[in-house]
Figure (tube, protein in one colour):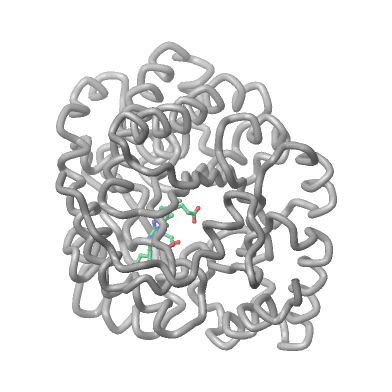
Length: 356
Ligand code: CP3
């Protein structure tokens, strides 16, 4: 890969806070900020299919910039999906209107051998190209996030064949076929490491690992089937960046619903932990005291439906409860498609008006 020269970064609040430094203002971005709550995205989707956008760098770039043009967010996140990894491994992934992702031929013990790990990262080069282009087009306005699904969350979608209320098919593997599960998780881990390093080489300035299905596991399953792989991801990314003489970038872990092991998460090598909307800020802070880690979160995405004055109070109370030290403001999960766009504006203004 050729060495890239990118525009100088003008707003580094998020990167500073991730590293434990003091920003001029509290930083904010929101999960799924480039998505269906934006009228301009819905218009765009009439002309282009979901994966066409993901796979065409110019289109992915345009969508990534939509929330940045409209709002004063402190970061952009590359438009893509966590399910591009199963796709690159050879599985079919469809995005069905009002259903969500569907994998018509889910993973079985028999077809697992067909997963094509070799070359999977190269197949995802389009994400790297989208990142490089977007980093230029951002012109240093805000930093650009890359991301990946975590091994367990990807395993869940691959076995269930889409979203699930219980993840019982994927969990069955953990209990019935632990060895095969470990093989699959190891394979995914290796692809995720290569994929995130490729994103960073392409220009991602911070990366987030989404373990959105953590909430379906308990402490012992998470300790056995997730923590070792999440740790390997953080460790290997750092050592690969070092070997390649590339600058380290902050790593963010969002293990949604994994309230049972927050202190274990803090020992994995990530710089920032995402906190979901069910967690109480003071408990989060006391659990993570002395852990030298930044927290990110955790407004209930549904709080955006509250009247303006109430929303301002909820945001202000949340910030008071977390305190302004090592804190990146975000929702406690992705924004919903029918969230009012004015509420997003109120959310951002409230956060940026806090005196530090
Ligand atoms: O955050 C961003 O703005 C960047 C883009 C992004 C998308 N998906 C675009 C998307 C990101 C970071 C994701 C991550 C993702 N994808 C996760 C982890 C985050 C989370 O919410 O827990 C998960 C679990 C998925 C899988 C996925 N993709 C689901 C369950 C769905 C359907 C439900 C939904 O939220 O829309 C998708 C589709 C999807 N991914 C859309 C977008 C904008 C909507 C599809 C459309 O345009 O029709």
